[in-house]
Image (cartoon, rainbow over all chains, first blue to last red):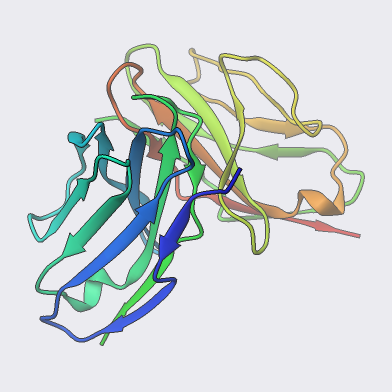
Length: 113
Length: 109
């Protein structure tokens, strides 16, 4: 069974630009969660989607948004990029809602210059 | 709000020595606790959860509600245990995981 895939793996953007990251969950998994990982703050929860609905949202500004499609694939978007948005963005999928056995993707390394 | 604290950023032990990775949490209710691990060049993955009370790769963790701790232990460290370890908490039900900042375990041959 293929694991969680994230595209692109690396991205360099300029301040003020926007970016869209993509996550394809494991086949059959309906829940997708997004995390931001930085050396200073560690892993911070961004949001979780289940059946195309956002179920939970972390403490991030409105510039961070996401969505989930009917095939469970998910995208997250960051608008008006700031230098502090440079991070590894991890996506995790699980079979059901609120399942804690989450399967993580390799992450997208975003660098904002 | 709930919080997970891993007081050690780096822990170095010799091969064959006992290992204890500390995790303390703040939450007044009954949490669900987990340990996730990330080996070099691999993805973050679930190691164990307190509810299952199992031993994975020789690691065990006991939830101590009195001390609000969930330390990860292994009696004899192996070189392949070198990795980044994250403790995580959920209030249970419909809340997402809260992760600690992680402890890097280095097992020296």
